[in-house]
Length: 389
Ligand code: F6R
Ligand code: MG
Ligand code: MG
Image (cartoon, rainbow, N blue to C red; front, side, top):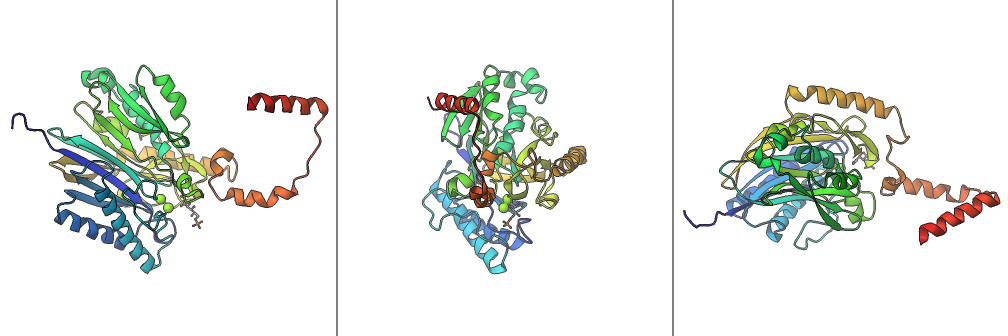
């Protein structure tokens, strides 16, 4: 009707590891059923419009649509309740690490900071609204930096940036500094090098949102929760999720998927402490086996229509990604042969958040100090002084 505002739809993807079967391997179907029961009841009551419950490895994933906007206490409360119910089942079945990501006993209006990962966007649906929900296991949010850059800023990946006038203006990237809790927005193509200067540091500067520059339409959103920073101790990697809008003024579905045809190295894998290739897989292979990995990525495609989730289609369940998976296996072999050495094992900064410091603590008193020659000592103290200025 003329003049009537179109209703807004919110897509919320909220995930948590609430326990899994045979180690940190795969979500148990009974826990998914418990979560689905909670969401089904909420759908019946009209709190949410639609939902889809799935898993990637040991992460339980709730995909929901509703009209309540991002950060809605009601929706976050609902997700919390679904995770709690699923965790109860996990405990009852004696599943491994039952309740792992529910870091707090009490819910206080928002699941951010309590353990679960969250990616949400509020949109006015286009006449046809294709989206992709990406969900990864055994890696961290920065794993999406490289592919998101390629999707929204690299013409060698996304032909539309060159060819399609609707994309030609470029995109804006909101980058979040997880250590300092601050953000910066950078435009592409004009600030591309500045953007890359930040997002190459994948453990710190994370692409959180992408907007189309011409009209500020939201194009993509990533969960940026870093559990170990929240918990102050090692609690696994953060196994991120992302939502990306496709087609008609956004990158085509195939341009979005193309960015994952290269199995780039990401931090995570065994004990959240190793670099390994991100392997895109279909749902049937969404489980972590070899060396607790390699890190896996699932992509589910939906049409969002009047808030309903039509789908999904299992996008990486396709021979077109066989070579990517084969390359991932080769890279996994190559990296594994480094054993406990860097650069397979993460560097000391990232290892701070693992169990390694506990081991190093034991050696502290075994080190014997050695006197440095005078000229070196002087130089070191000069350098230290210069550094503290
Ligand atoms: C990584 C992960 C696993 C565990 C590993 C040891 O995110 O979850 O690789 O770190 O299986 O687990 P625990 O210490 O529970 O035996
Ligand atoms: Mg886990
Ligand atoms: Mg996981």
